[in-house]
Length: 219
Ligand SMILES: Nc1ncnc2c1ncn2[C@@H]1O[C@H](COP(=O)(O)OP(=O)(O)OP(=O)(O)O)[C@@H](O)[C@H]1O
Image 1 (cartoon, protein in one colour):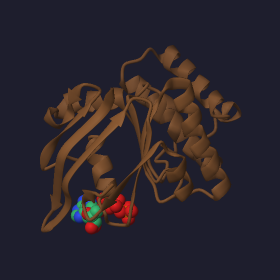
Image 2 (tube, rainbow, N blue to C red):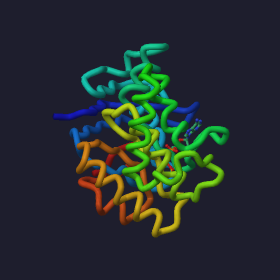
Image 3 (cartoon, helix red, strand yellow):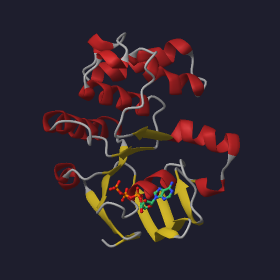
Image 4 (tube, protein in one colour):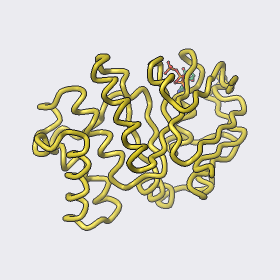
């Protein structure tokens, strides 16, 4: 069953038509990479699918909800519950510890403090970071920071994790570890991932690649 479906997505910025009618569908538990040359519209598409940006036309359905119809608090709640994000740069909050950074979306979702904390600790343990719970992001390596960002993305058991160049800022050994982690998480939780990447290795490991060119999916 498709967990994510987008039909005929259009987006323009001023005079530039960035997305020219994109269709995409992702099954539950799939790991799909979006690839293509710079400026093809990959990040724009990912942001629209992940509710961070709005399409000018077209419909996106995620976990049975037509998200293109949601706005305001309903949209924010939906994003918090159903969507996890991992960006190229971790965007962790520098004043909070690793475990607090992971907890924050869980607290926003209204989870009980102790339960959220326990799940955050379990996730960080699973990601090999149990010795780093109380460290602030600045004290962690790039690979560790990115794993904390993955744990944060997972805290509310999202329907889909969207990742935009998640290993673009890592050396190849750390990148490989993070890629492996995505597959481990799929195995363990049947987690769905949609990833924009220029990393050939990750694209090849994926179940499927979607190739974009000039605002369209070409294969
Ligand atoms: N907020 C914006 N305002 C104006 N133009 C934008 C905006 N966001 C993206 N664009 C333009 O849309 C086009 C597609 O950008 P996008 O970032 O989606 O491409 P991409 O395929 O992800 O590229 P890259 O691989 O370099 O990240 C580019 O020409 C970009 O300059």
